[in-house]
Image (tube, rainbow, N blue to C red; front, side, top):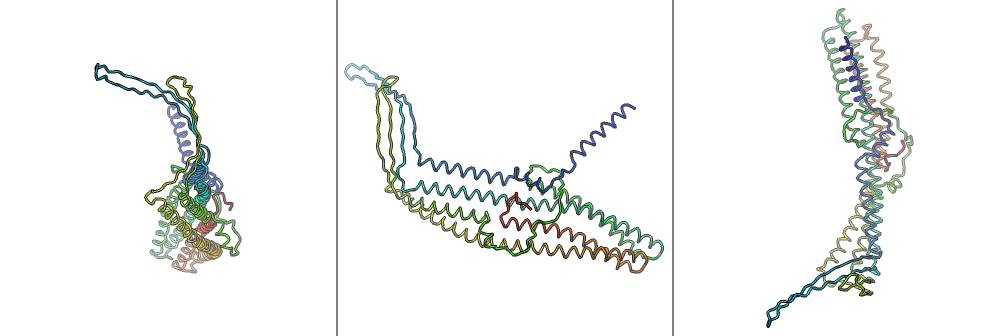
Length: 430
């Protein structure tokens, strides 16, 4: 008795743990945004690119700052000589100790370093906008996944409701068949409809797991977790007026990134041309050296150096040509990108407005289908309409319920595409 009781308690405890482990984790849209902002690999990658660009600028700036180095040496040299007369070999060893510091400062390089710093600054801007683009893309994928799971969850409820209705229909048809007022074909059709409805319930539950997988990926999680989402299919953007697409395009992060890269290429072109100027440095050194330690023989030097390559195989000319081509490419990319952005903005806005309009129509279709089904069900029960007419109306109700759900989910995705086209970041408030 005690062993059985103990086993029952253990089984209940294990069952509770497993149920809790696999229970769905409810998440709001704000929860999803917060987690994706911290964990999504695309955002982490973009953030690291920005850090690299900042470090590159510091490296470039170091060229205009003084360069100071120190050194300490000990050298031993030996000379071995053989006397040709006596045949005696003599070895002499000399030790030399030295230490000192050296420094140099760039005075002029044709403003090459100045242009390199400008290019680095524009590159940092470009990566700032690149992060914004990544954030906008992550928001789109996250909202698509969020709406997908929201739809999948509601579809389970709808299919279960349809299956329950199909079961009631089968019971009604069975009663009429047993009473001799319905033929066997109608009974078999009702049974098939119920089997189809039960299959759709199973499929809807499988689709929830698939939608969870998609949301897990959009959140930046490494493993699949059982999550559920809470929310609705309402949109916050209620402004139906046609926007100024030209103005919107000028503020999108994607276009601003292209502009920053174009300016970086312009500085790069100027830097390449500056290679034709000489480099002028002021340099100096101070130190001590002697054949013993510590050395006390002081020495110093100071001067100005100028370097200018005479023959370099045409590399400077080729660099200028390459930099000019890169600038032309960046300008063309900006022009092409702006044209694409304008089209994408208008396309996304049009699809969003169409999605809103479709919801209004689909809601009316659903209301009509529900009313028709209510009337038809009463008429079939009293024998006023045939099975064929009744089942067509029932099928229409099923189709209207699913279609209305699909259109509501599609409207959320359409809004997400519109926000992404405008450059809305992950933290964009709906």
